[in-house]
Image (cartoon, rainbow, N blue to C red; front, side, top):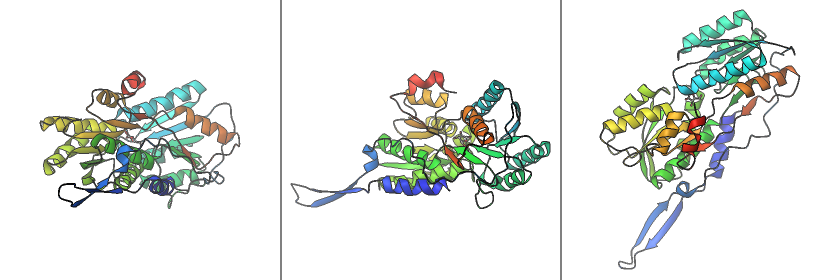
Length: 356
Ligand code: AHR
């Protein structure tokens, strides 16, 4: 069952087609045609409904019920607040439960994460949690499954043609990234009245949130002819890279009026790039992003960022609860979808103190 496919078709069905408005000029008696952007007045659709058809995880390695576990977590990077919050949440929950947790950090390198996972397989923990850097991690994940280790994917998915959910890994717990992209598109339309020349800062090439956030946003804005995508480039989910890429794209496209960033770190980089150009973020150029980190909520409150769609990094409680349910023989589905908030000028300030 592929969340991407389900979300895209639901998103397409939910989007109203653009309304063709024909107005007659009283003076010239000529007819002018404009196209209204339904997204500009659309309410935030909130979270998607998990499809009932997601299969149960039946053929992955089993987990024996015990009073304590030796658990490992392969994290893909620690270079942004989101990753640090996810690791901290995993550590806090393991500590609370009294489990031994080994954490590796791939330092944003796919070859390092493959090596990390191979070395963890050799240590044979009871359970392996993996936050895969890209979808290409599927092959090594399959190896972990073959070694009899139950694997739980956190926050990013892998290529299902190579690693089968419910067989090579137990489940993937993640946000609906396509939905996040669609929600961001609606915020972009609100920010710009449905008329903007947009540059898009993409997440790490090959990472499932980068693929799906692009899919959700790009397909949603197609319903508004006034929302034009000028350019799209990989900013690696990183603040400094996002700033550099934004500088290059803003120089190449001086008519840009909006930036869509696949995460807050790149959005904050883009805001710096906009200021460096002598333009005013939130006025000359609108910015919309995804995550909900503290700096982004401050930027929303300061009106330099229009909105950020939440992607909650606090996986610890759900990850370990799912693992325990699996050990108890309860049904665990092959996909578990998180629910996320939306931060706008209405609620950003009130949430700063709780943010990471
Ligand atoms: O996979 C989730 C994404 O990865 C978050 O949006 C981003 O900040 C992180 O690096």
